[in-house]
Image 1 (cartoon, rainbow, N blue to C red):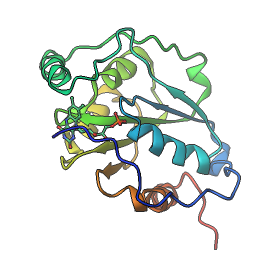
Image 2 (cartoon, rainbow, N blue to C red; image 1 turned 180 degrees about the vertical axis):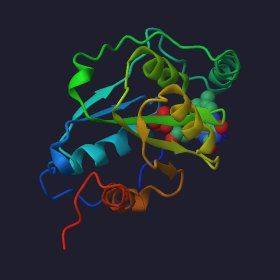
Image 3 (cartoon, rainbow, N blue to C red; image 1 turned 90 degrees about the horizontal axis):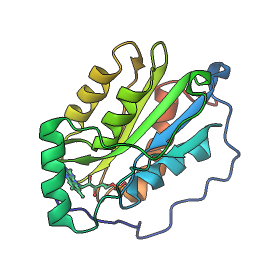
Image 4 (spheres, helix red, strand yellow; image 1 turned 120 degrees about the vertical axis):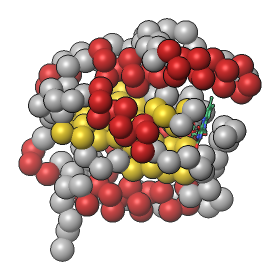
Length: 187
Ligand SMILES: Cc1cc2nc3c(=O)[nH]c(=O)nc-3n(C[C@H](O)[C@H](O)[C@H](O)COP(=O)(O)O)c2cc1C
């Protein structure tokens, strides 16, 4: 499935409210990897809604922009369960209660930097929340990977934003954050 940088036809509605403190006074961190910016957009929607810190994961070796070369490399990395070294270091991860983990689906699973992140940090006892962007693939394999790499965390229902559906993404992210109890529903 080819990469595709997608901008909504109409600009998404601006978030007019300040981010809300997460339900239960929990401290929230959003970490994400994004090669072409789609996952960064969704991370921004979550950050707009939930009082949180946000960190973009960067690899020591930057991935190429040449799709065919990248696809061949990622096929190999996925087959090898390779953990690309991260340039990003996260201080004080122990302070956080909830960690959102965002990534593109690459070769049917989570992009390899997520494997590095989840194997490098001890997330025992924390709540982990996956979110991803993709073409047409299912996200299930990536969710299974996330669950297997943090077996002592509570992994909540994730959200997947597929290509062609960005015009409604902000609303769906908001509904999802309420459904999983991160943001309290206002009645
Ligand atoms: C190397 C590579 C492999 C990909 N593999 C898949 C795939 O297996 N299934 C899919 O639905 N999308 C696949 N995509 C599309 C990306 O998931 C999609 O463009 C995503 O939104 C990119 O996120 P980003 O802009 O945050 O990097 C692939 C993209 C690349 C570059």
